[in-house]
Image (cartoon, rainbow, N blue to C red; front, side, top):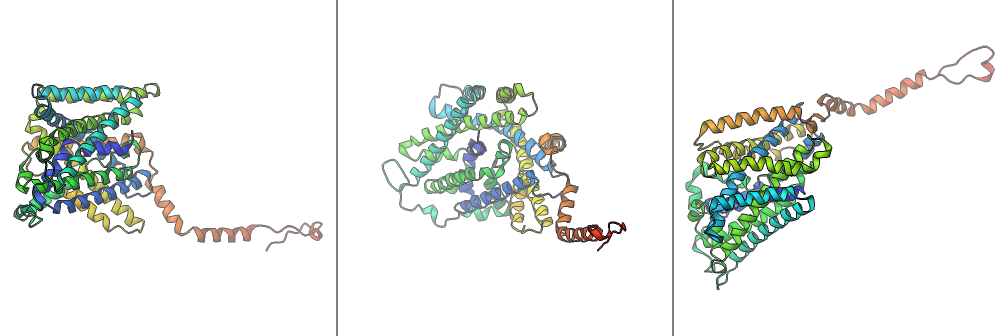
Length: 451
């Protein structure tokens, strides 16, 4: 499974679709600029991950701990997010498709299908995953394009230029003050959460660049379309702005397409989670059982998610505190990678000033996650456990322990500058110590001549 599709699946999850609408409502057209900034920051951080994980750049002797933090943040956050995704998709299925089918039953059905898909052969499992993700993306983009069409007849916005577009930035953006602006940055970063997942599958974070571009285009189109048919206040307050906007096209049938996006995207995102975890544990089990890693991971994580769903966690406020803690740790890990990249580039005497921008963007996103926490004990306990697990993982995982030692890197760098002088001095010593071949005339006298 390509790392590009794993990132795209997580970004297109129901939470990501919600971000696109809420961000447009909070910032108006300014949110498009925030999306571009967040996308550039994600690409810069992905490049830093590549260079640090490969050992090409080194900042400290314990760089590996940052990647341990990333791993625990990814899997914990995606697991608790999966509970939320299933709750949203179950609601969408019940409201849009079959009202007689209960929300919880729909959620369990999607979860069961994802577990079943991961237990199939690699080919069939990949086909199901790729097909669901492709349909979800195409449905979403189609709705966004249709809303942007200035025509009548059940498609597009009803007027040539809605009044809400004067000015382009809503009044609420200025009334929100600094805290509202920081939240807008948080929403921009959240839109691209999971861009680092190719590092798990292919050990190349930069492989997510195509996924980042696809999401930037799709969310940009949708944010602009949303502002054409809904007021910023309506978008900012809605918990399902994507469904509200989709109802404005195709005589209301756009909701069917957006509902399909929610269901297919949830299925693809959960499959991506199971496959990522299976890929991670594959190296920790015997080789003859490695083919069952994805199925085993699906059964393990699926069981945890099923228990949380069955006990009502999808509708609890405590789940939001766990999600906030996971996102805070995840975004904080991004910021830590940015900081290590700055240190490494400075040591290598390379240009590093743009890295401060990416560090600031991800640090702000992590800080915003700490605001308005209703269950502070859940939040603090989760962050503490993730920190301990990340440190332990960073020092024990095989792929992190295989890094070249920091001292060796320093010795190589120090020796690069003096290599030419060392070679010249060595040649001089050899020239001074090498004896000259004896002349035939001196053989009888046993005389050896030196230069």
